[in-house]
Amino acid sequence: MQRRLITGAVAFYLIALLLVVFWPTTVTSGVSTQFTEALRWLRIHRLGALNFWVIERTANVLLFVPLGILAAYFFRSGGRIIAIATCAAASMAIEFGQYVLLPHRFASWDDVVCNSLGGAIGVLIVVLAERRARTRLAFEAARTS
Image (tube, rainbow, N blue to C red; front, top):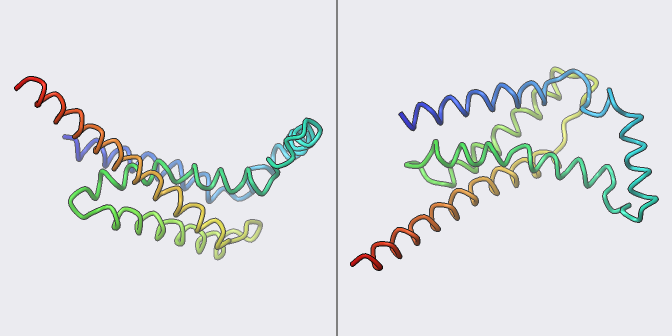
C-alpha cells in the first residue's frame, strides 16, 4: 500500500514538474513587469543580493527537493545514491528536452547542478528524518524497559 502511495505521488509530481519545465515560455515571461518591479523593490530596500540569478538558482534547487524525497522512499532498498543519481538523470533529461524541443528556452548545466543539489537535499531530509525516528524509537524502548 505504501509503495502504491509513493508511486502515485511520484507520478503526480512528475506530471507537475513536466508542465513547469516544458512550458513553451519561461516562468517569468507572463509576469516580467511585476518580477522586474519586485527585483527593483529588493534593491531599493538593500536586499539586492536577492537578484534574478539567486532567485532562479534557489527555485531550481527547491523544485527538485520533493523529487529527492520521493526517490529516497521509492529506492529505499536500492540505496540513497541511486535516488540522487535518478534526480541528476531526470534533470539532464529535462535540460536535453528543453534544448531539443523548446527554441525559446535554453538548456543549462547550472540548472542540472542546482536540480541535483535539490534532489540530494531531499534525500538528506529523508535520511535525517529516519535517523531521528530510529533514535526516538530506541529512546522509547530504553525508557519502557
